[in-house]
Image (cartoon, rainbow, N blue to C red):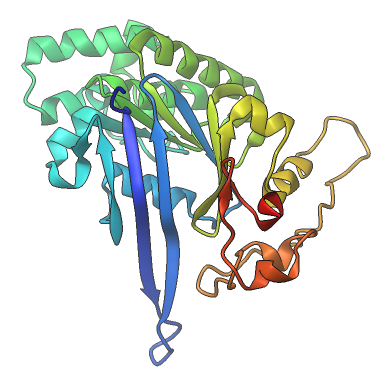
Length: 313
């Protein structure tokens, strides 16, 4: 069996937060025992409500914060044991807002070249690879002398993608990379990412709250709730026949293009769960429309990729 491109094993991140100077410390399990495995060249989509732990998981995978437990392996190498330069050659991010992630005082060519300069790549090779990467993301050569403020949102995101890929990493982690863009531009960036994935044999982690976007781009989808993966399945199967009640609620909440229908009411309520006060048993049971008595007492087993007592009944 071949080694997965990236393997996440029992990853945890716990924070201690305190309300006010004399408040009682509270423990927050932002990421709680996440295990995932992604084959080379595949795209994993991670979805869930705001506050479910998606962005914390992204920071752990990138090595931007230490894990409380667990590990992240890229091609069998433990990222926590590598220095920053070695990690950068294996995994790179594309963030949500391309304007704030680009230095407004630097020219586009210099921005894309920065990872190469940090790795000590020679000047002539840097210029050649920057030009090659700009062409690959659909940016004209003359754009290299411009500043980020002179570009559109879609062009800036293309620059962010070029900067991430100029080191030719194995893994690309995209954290809400299209949410700050107009709908007409989103599809262009998604198609670009799909083309780059095929041409560069990239393995991609795509984090989003937009289920329609994830359905378009992901091979496999992991649904996150209060720090845990409650369902994982091939994208086609998950969208056709979701197994976990939370996944069904997320899919039911997607807006339709039909006028007058408004926002669907799926019974989840407006108040998001408190990660510092995780309920016992199944952590989704206080909001679940089909919860049974044991849901409030026992942690559900994983059955066919989903954590739900009803699947084992």
